[in-house]
Length: 167
Image 1 (cartoon, rainbow, N blue to C red):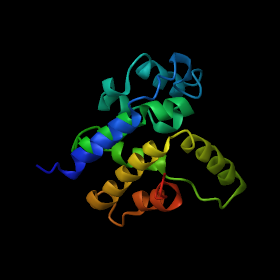
Image 2 (tube, helix red, strand yellow):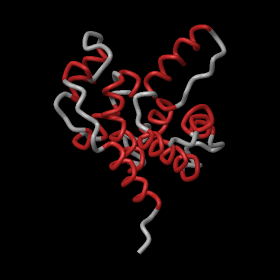
Image 3 (tube, rainbow, N blue to C red):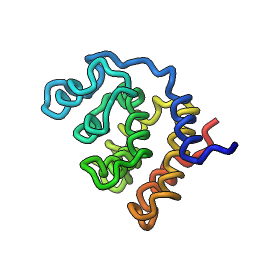
């Protein structure tokens, strides 16, 4: 029996991220002092990524996660995006997740600094994790044409970084 593409993708994501250690309560967010970072840290504190609900994710963007938190909790965002939740409060998880994976252009000095930071964040992922992220973005590009009519965001994420052959 052949599994649907989405089920194969979920298995790949889970296998790639199964051994990522919990970042520690004080390493979930970049800052536990500002409102967004402290809210994210409180929502995720002590939780395995599999325990997070779409509601937890909706209010906490990927950009506030520390590098360790990003590597540990990204699968929760990928799964929530794959599962959909169409027509509900959580429908924006897909674009927010893909936006968090899109490497910024280098047009300005400020963007160059942000790009360098993103490259360090993306650099924490193992080759298997990068392949799983690439497969997720390919799925998004191919399957969510209504949400990304021109495939722009997933396509840009693939072209700028994730589309490489990660060995």
